[in-house]
Amino acid sequence: MTAPGSYVLVIAVESPTTIKVGALGDREFTAGGYAYVGSAFGPGGLSRVDRHRRVASDDHDTRHWHIDYLLGADSIRLATVETYPNEDIECALATAFADAGCEPVAAFGASDCDCNSHLWKLDGRSLPAAVKTVSEETA
Image (tube, rainbow, N blue to C red; front, top):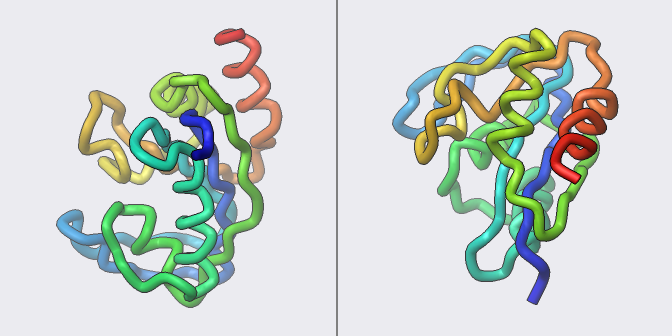
């Protein structure tokens, strides 16, 4: 079994697109980089990230979470992943993106917490800088 933890998916939206995101309905995504923060403390732990990779590469069709709808779209590419084994920092990461001035995709991926969003438009901002700040604060 893989360790539990938190993660950040860096996603490239290669062209503007509208995607139906489950119960959230249609959402518009402008071209550019996005960061999605998630956690994997259930069965399988961070192997959930492998599932996200399979959805992004069209090897898995089941849409369960909001991120599945985005990753499964044609104009979307999963660029990179950062993982934080044994660290429960999902909401701290989301707060760091908000504090850095990143634009939230309202209510995306945050149905089980008080965060505004777990998906953020990066607008050219450096993901490693935002992630480094959070991981240093929680160390």
